[in-house]
Amino acid sequence: MPLDRFPFLVPDLRDIIEILLVAFVIYRLLLFLAGTRALQILLGLLSLVLLYFVAVIFKLNMITTLLGLIFTYGAFAAVVVFQPELRQALARLGTSRAIRFLTNTDKHVVADEIADAVSRLARNGTGAIIAVEGEVSLNDYLETGTEMQANVSADLLATIFTPYSPLHDGAVIVRGNQIIAAGCVLPLTQFPVTDKSLGTRHRAALGLSEETDAAVIVVSEETSKISIATRGLLRRGVTADQVGDALAGGGRQTLALSDASGKASPA
Image (cartoon, rainbow, N blue to C red; front, side, top):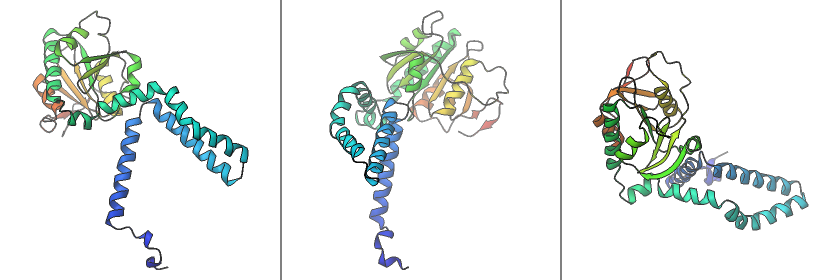
């Protein structure tokens, strides 16, 4: 059957651009909602919409009427019931990369503060693990520690990891220019680690970097060496300056990656 009888089946350049834009918006929305209760709420609403169409098809008038009332007044109820989630979503939007770019948040300052902190911790032989959030939300791990809102500073990070402090035995999570939690428990890597010198912090750094796009910096308490894990690979024996460069985005291609078995891999 010739396609000229169905011109809508032959998209032009404008249609392709619109499809790509809509797909990108949906992807960014799902990425924004990932790891939050808002995603569960969205799935629940989609289930109700699907049930509504099924009721219409099979002419289930009572269910159709009840769902119609829910859709009519549900928006007002959702604003009241889910006010905390909406407030959290707006807060996350305000700390997204796009908004931070528009507000000229200088990530180089944050990178320098973290680099200064790990340098101090390494000199003192103090163990530490710092997770810097990327595009994937780390909200799931906030509940395992103590939530906080504080500007990233070398002094504060060094204080948190001071031995015997209440929050030293766990990970600090950084979002943008804020420390949003401390004392958090991160998932350990599920892959076999051949290097027995890697402790729990290194395994947790690998585990989180395997599940998210976060950059996780580790200071070894035993060796005072600094490591950074990204994309399931661990760079070991890096300097504080290299950490700052990597976090600022300028050094990802200059550092050699090595996994737990000691194999080199390109950044």
